[in-house]
Length: 332
Image 1 (tube, rainbow, N blue to C red):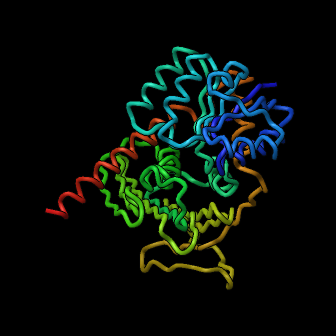
Image 2 (spheres, rainbow, N blue to C red; image 1 turned 180 degrees about the vertical axis):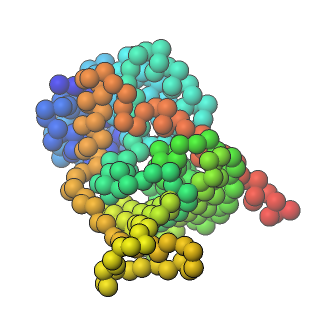
């Protein structure tokens, strides 16, 4: 059993703590550290888990550190844990900057510890049910919209919300990036609250990502188009829909109720049919913790590795730079 400690007991930190306490066959929760002393007292009473006075004292007592603190502190917390030869689970984004992320990768390789990044949508049941059907996407459109909340506004919406979809497209598209275009605006916070990015890959795939934390409703959807298929993933409702096309043979008898596309003279007719893969009920956060425990115990690469986290942050930084340049041109 792995002894684990949590850094950061805010909204998400409390969720992590609650779920880790349920995974008694995988983890033993030793305690937590939070900079807010009043909050630490409340969490200590509510969860009956020890509150440590410093990160250093917590790190000494555990095998694994779970970092759920603000992004600005990720590097300091993770580097301290890694240098102490502790495995690290770190919430997305991996770090505040690409240079910090690269440094963390170097430190983790030198220490020989496991690092998993909390790109939780990889464990979403809708995404898992869709994955077997996704083959060489040609176009991906993603919308991630959220009602305004002060949590996460310490970073641009690209690092707060869009980073999830950035990780997903990098998982699905097996190609290097050819071109990136992006724009974004700040509405209430000091950093962009709404952003759109168009990513073109060298294999021809194009991805259009939109993220907003100024929406009247929540939405987390991806639409994937590929040869003879359309795949819709609703991460929020945990629902997957697949529409496929198949060629109808010239001599084939067609069901009168079938939906058929007639492409004209000299071209084969195509039948449209639907599939609704079953999505298993799961808790994605709990599953990512189980996956990380297995990676440590079996000495294998984590499902969402530090390399994955670095790649997502690398593309996020390109998007942010393109947004900055675009805004400067508009001002001029």
